[in-house]
Amino acid sequence: CGDISDITYSEQEEIEHVIENAEARIFDLAQGRDTKSFRHISEVLLSVYSHLQELATDKAAAMGTPTGFSGLDQVLAGMGKGDFVLVGARPGMGKTSFALNIATNVAQSTKKKVCIFSLEMSAEQLVNRILASEAMIDSYALRNGTLTPEEWTHLAEASSRLSGCDILIDDTPGITVSGMKGKLRRVANNLGLVVIDYLGLMGTDKRVENRQLEVAEISRQLKAIALELKIPVLACAQLSRA
Image (cartoon, rainbow, N blue to C red; front, side, top):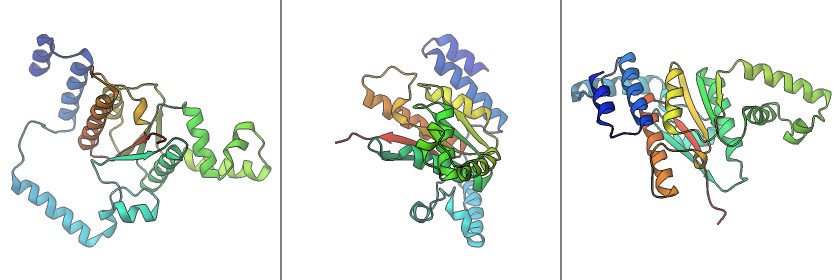
């Protein structure tokens, strides 16, 4: 509390940073973590040794969080705790669909919460895309309502499966990293994955000289979220058509 007061009265930080810092410190206390203390190597060695024993007896533990795409999981060995994963491609290549497939795969296989931040489309549009993929229905037919009786059956089955998943969607336009972090802390219990669509539409609390530096700062902060919450963060990034 004293540290928070000192930061506040110094008036050196933007109000968003002060609030975010205060929330982070209180959250760490609630989680029983003291972010300022050192850890002796003997303590870390015990943790590493315990993990190695787990890998020796359970090969699946080496995989991290599986994407659900077996070929990709063999290359990545799954998405590890604290990993910041970027899916980069040109516009219209299927970044969103791919990221949503991973999100639903993780939610179904791990039974953990998956948080999706959609900055490009509304929650309803996003769920329409997830439904089309899960029910294997043409998205155009879903948009204009020209579904066959068989497709309605597939849609009902997919809806039933998805409603049992712990998928949380936030469609706040231009959300900042601190705003995102605050929302994630409130649902941190049993959180398994965060998906962001997409990086280029995120805002930042800091004043920076250009957009390139701004995106670099956002990326740095997202990596910090992944490490703090010990979860993989997957973000789509749009590349130039060139």
